[in-house]
Image 1 (cartoon, rainbow, N blue to C red):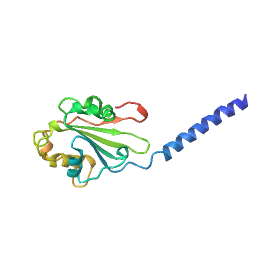
Image 2 (cartoon, helix red, strand yellow):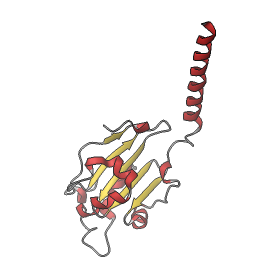
Image 3 (cartoon, rainbow, N blue to C red):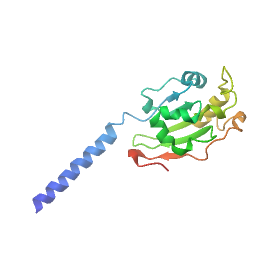
Length: 168
């Protein structure tokens, strides 16, 4: 009976140590950089003055940019993170993906709701870039610019739990 207990507890200890090692070593460092996905990604990167973080999953701040919410279905991983918040007339939806290596902020943008983007042949990204700078928490950009006041934004933040445990 003692031998069986040693085997069971020894096996559990090995699994626990392996799990902790995977969490500590398998993450590849804390998230950093900015990633922009979706419609007009190169133009938006230029407006933000950033370079694409590679791999995209390693970015601390990700912008998912779509010309309308229906196009989000072409990025199924991101559509799952946004859930029902990315519907209707919302122009900006915030999500934070919690992970053992560090959380990642994801901002979903719907071009239709932003003045100067959807209705122009040459979009004016300045209002959106200022809003995203505020979302990133950059110095000197504590609040969204005045031009973003008319843009409907989803209230609060969608918290996405790790390991497929759902969202809050």
